[in-house]
Image (cartoon, rainbow over all chains, first blue to last red; front, side, top):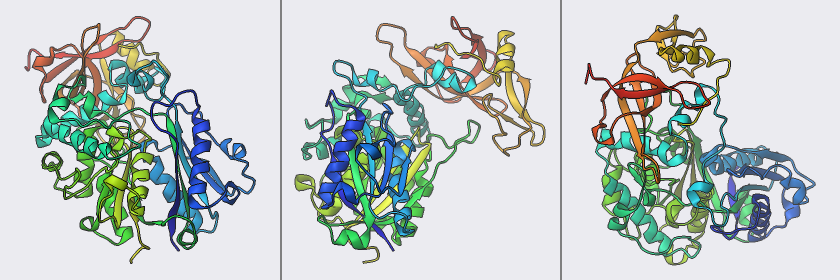
Length: 386
Length: 127
């Protein structure tokens, strides 16, 4: 038994106004089903990952007219949700519980005339009790919460702002080649270094975009996927690891992420090693996230993620092509669906100008919270083990 | 700083803070200290946590400075208290003096409409 991603549906992404997340979700699912060569009537499973606007839920089932639903849930693992949804869909399909499962992420945080930062202050928290202390002190939105993590990494390993800048430059080089990317003007390291400080040490060009829209994928059995319209993208392996950082002496917060355990689990399930991976699609909410994820997956030694990025290995023509659509930094921010959708496009060989020549095995990461949640997928353009 | 309201768990912490005293959670069975928000011991998961006062000294682990557009910069850091737990707090320290391991003394400040919150200052005696 094994599963595959048979369909991909993407709405217009970015500064697209006047539509709710729920409306985006319907369009993405409908496109994904058509892309697979199926119809909405074929769906018997639906997994929904609401974003910060949080207005997409299980009612999507009736909106889509689904009457034979055997698997239905919201999944909220934040940035790890997309990977988690593929995993739960695969388990359900392998168990015979469902045949064709749509997994969707949809969000619409942007409002016209309002800055991205103002639109995206994270999920609202009650300012009550001791759990509110960090937010009350100023660690509230994602940039400052990642800034303290990044600074720890800098202290421990000598990671520099210029090395983080190299991640941003590489992502933009890919985005230039991606017609769906929001940011397609090339940038230089100097542009990064002179960009506005958001939360020291993170500058504007260290931060991902904020986008409206939705992306859906269709998961089904590998056998069924092979009879459908698109080249199947086979699910070879997966893992999850949620580090549960404790706020005390000896914490690895900022130094080691869930990828350090999730990655090896996923590779073991896939029966491959990190050296077999052709393309990396990593959750890059910040440039720093790319660096720590590369280290924790084992693409370089701990602490060498910065120098690896500075070597140019991640960009077009580099030895370790990474975030080949421009990532969340430069293409669009659809949580874990940004890396996952690009993995599907590359595995199919549909990457156009940005297509990586060797695209047999792709590692996909999803990172949520502040490195609190992590999911990994190993995807292949051939059936597992072939 | 944003005002924070008390709840049942935090009431003893804020009562002590009003007296200028920092409380942490202590587990008699493990002998380990946990952060104020903890409900189980952060080392052993023991459920015997009780409030105990501590000296309020620590060292800076990491920090960020958020440029204020039309307001002063926000300096916020994570402090490792001498007993081991980490506490996030506003820092009343010039950004140029921030460094890893900087000795910190915890005080309290009360934003209007809320409970007293920890604030980190330079620990002159140890600095």
